Length: 115
Image (cartoon, rainbow, N blue to C red):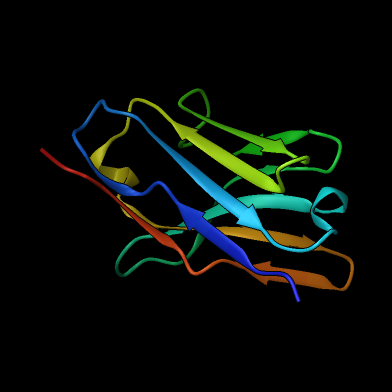
C-alpha cells in the first residue's frame, strides 16, 4: 500500500514563496507519474503540475513560470516550488501518484496567500 504525505504548506504573503514536499512509501515511486493538484473553497480540484517517471513536466497555465515541480527518486519525494504567490493560489494542495492500475492521493496541505 502506497502512502503519500505532503508537507510545507502554510501562510505566506503575496509575492512570497513556499516549497511543498510529498514523500511516498513503498518502492514503486520511480515508476509512476507524480502530480500536484489543488482545490480552493467552492471550486473543483484542478491540476497544478505533473512530472513523469522520466522527468517530463507539465503545468497549468495559471502557474507556469511561477511554480516548478521536481522529483527525487532516491528519496521517493516530489516537490513543488511555488514563487510569486498570489491570493488566487490559496487552496488545499494534494499530491498524487498514478499510472496504469495505480492511483494514490495524499491527505493535502493548506496553502494560504494573504497579507
